[in-house]
Length: 329
Ligand code: AMP
Ligand code: MG
Image (cartoon, rainbow, N blue to C red):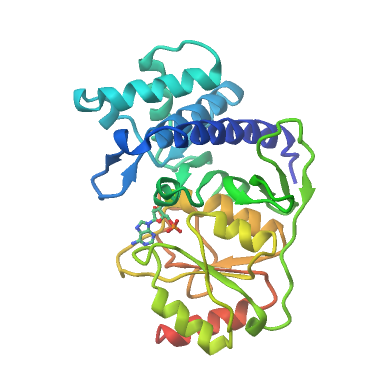
């Protein structure tokens, strides 16, 4: 297995910088410059600034690497978005501690426009769970590295996730075939972190499961039926973003259910790459609702998968069987 230390170091720094920018934007009036995308989902100054910062960091360290990012700068270039553009540039310059022309800041955002059809590329969700971010709840900066269709490395920066010492903000990494670790998000000197591992539950009935806050993103009545079938009595842990994968990886929950709400929806790679490798490296298992492995060899979407089931591992087959039964398969 190749040594991933250099990629990990660069990715940790990039995700930490993006998280600082997100936190800075959260302290401003975010709504003022929030844009509605074509698919009606919101995008904020922080999504753009975070994508710019991460793509810039990757470009400096690995100039040949491409990035499949969620956002692009088309809308930001329009006259209508002059105010949002100005705010994005200010936040990026503030984080970098230098003055950079708007064109370069937007150019870095557009470095995230790769198709995901090369042997090696990064995938970035600069703010996963933008709706959670807008509510002041959970969100994540999610960065994964894909080689030959396999996620080899993933990082989750979770600025609002509670920490055991009563604070907020955690950073997770996972290396395929290696370890999952958690680090202090706001303290860059914490480069070693501590290992994290899933909570082993003897039976699914003892599990706590997590799911989306947004009922449009995951069918909550299906998951309630699945929980019933498995004998789970604990209330669902509803949190936004890939913080759900972090919750399973560090043992706050043992199951993450993402049940399709529409037959034609295909999951985006940046919504799952980092989370999947963090959970697997922590000892868990991740599949789709049929129990199939996630297939990252189809560009920007998980074409061959439907929904997500992530668990602490030993209970996986039993959980997938319940999912299939409730879905009538
Ligand atoms: P979550 O915070 O878990 O609700 O997930 C947020 C992500 O859900 C966003 O980044 C979107 O890419 C994704 N999303 C949007 N629409 C859907 C949908 N119909 N089904 C599943 N995921 C969706
Ligand atoms: Mg997302």
